[in-house]
Image (cartoon, rainbow, N blue to C red; front, top):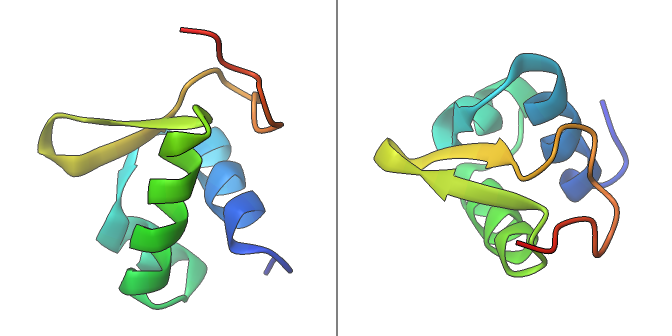
Length: 71
């Protein structure tokens, strides 16, 4: 689907909305641990956030580039 998991995760969240790690892994057909590691990195970069119930969401719709969030 995508060459890079970070871009793929962001694209899925942008297209489908909030999703859990297992949902992302299933949609992207990648290992759940890979999703977990990549989401942790995206969270540290401020590109996504994790809400109640472990649901991931984009910080800003379409904002998948570095330094997009300033919250």
